[in-house]
Length: 371
Image 1 (tube, helix red, strand yellow):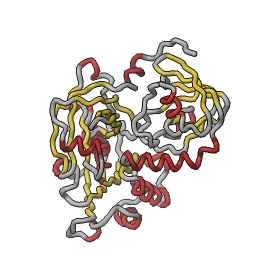
Image 2: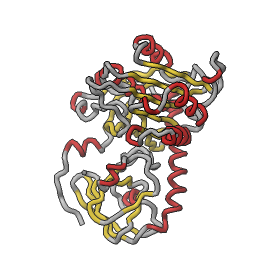
Image 3: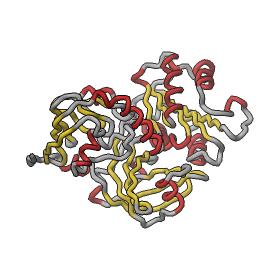
Image 4: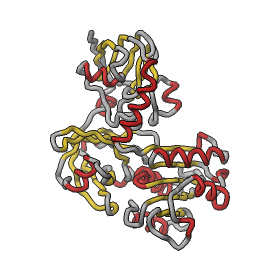
């Protein structure tokens, strides 16, 4: 059954991939590349981003379609968006981006989304603090610059873990910012495979280090907004210590960086645990103003997988419950997610789900990707 409708044209454009030309590439670290895009005039409005948001990328590499999500590391006023891609062991897209991609090539890119953001307030007097590991610096770089440029009375303290100085993304730019904003920006780099003069700065940003930081350097009472970004285990460790030290939940913001393989593995394990909760259902799906119905049988997978099997081209990227590209709103009935790393609590309360992680728990389920 199909019914015509009229979705917001802006919303429809936001959930689609658009061909963007790679304007330039430059080294961001010994194993990472910074990619700047050229956004055509007619798409500039929907590609305007908030500091901290990310882009969905789609590319065909060696005959295989790959979808990935990368944070924007630039400010809106710096022009068209840029991302950093770190080459990882066995990473198909990251290897392609670092070794083969060149200026003038075209990638398919989805407009910016994400809630790991800062909205600068020129009148605010806040202390922003970030705990970051590896390429987790990419969204935090945009947040940091937004605070330094647009909150003149605020301070920023960054604890940044890497293997070595050579693998430290934005090494030069961060030290330039430190010298430019000496009274407002404190940079504390930690290296796990390179000795530094101060012994405390050697090793990973682990629970013991975070406890020492809060006890001797920066009490949680002085942290007005905290951003934690990096691998999942690092986020869990840092967040647990800060909460244990009394940091209010509404001051803590995190974004999980997983490889595509990690995300799929974690999601598959979570769905296996949740599979018995699924109900036989009829799902009504609204996408781009068109409503269709599909049958769902327990054991068929997630809502997204069932839609794909029915030939419905629903939006998705990571399949790991992280990026929120597959977000839809429940209009009728109920659904449960195996895991959710991307939606905020307020969104879940409003009925939003990640279809890559959700199954129906009622006989009738109506969802909309157009909300």
